[in-house]
Image 1 (cartoon, rainbow, N blue to C red):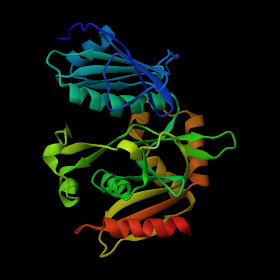
Image 2: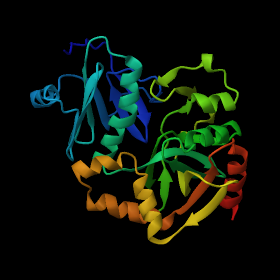
Image 3: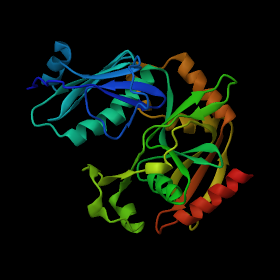
Image 4: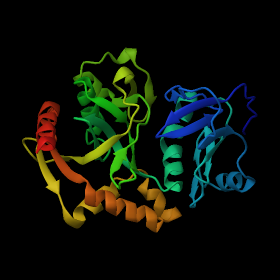
Length: 310
């Protein structure tokens, strides 16, 4: 059963170079620097989803992905309805968890909006190294968040966590757009990196992930894309980095597109696929194989910096 929510104000934010007007308070995002009203690129509002969506949920369906109309159900929290690449309707349930709601809005719902807008986004974190952006991707548990936090702790500017949106300049070169100043790190990695867990807020009960504020090391400006590094846990004794070339590069990059599985239902525009090909052709792609045991972050960073200087 949903309930009505009285809106006191609308909040204006900026992320991925998009202006966002939201009825949901999203403290993770940066407010627009200029408070005068601007036409939003994205609107997030409370409301009721179409009746057919609720009927589908009553029959046991939990999601539906069409090109310009997508929705998914978060048990005991909300139904999120995403359409036209510019709107998220939040249909709330009673006694919902606000942290869980924001997690899904800033993650899956944003990812679906980006797909609807034909924006290419890699599932991974991005930092600025020597003036250029570098994306770290890989399967869950590969260590991309740990690596990105370790790099930030060494003073490298942070661009985005989880969703690395790739944009294009007028000259055809590619950039990574800034997201918002928060990283997520699992409990095991936090312990290894000497964080006091009790000082941080858990954002994901299933995987024991905690929110880390980035602060002044967040880059508000996009940066030219230099390389993509895919992390893999492998049967190796030491960290190894190999360059991926030819058609394998495109295949590996496509596998790591954020919410690529959604396109199995919604389809993929030719323009989206062509952009992925262009990015793969113009961007260096590396595979980082790290040992299953031990903490090899220092070795990973050393080899990455060395590879970027070549």
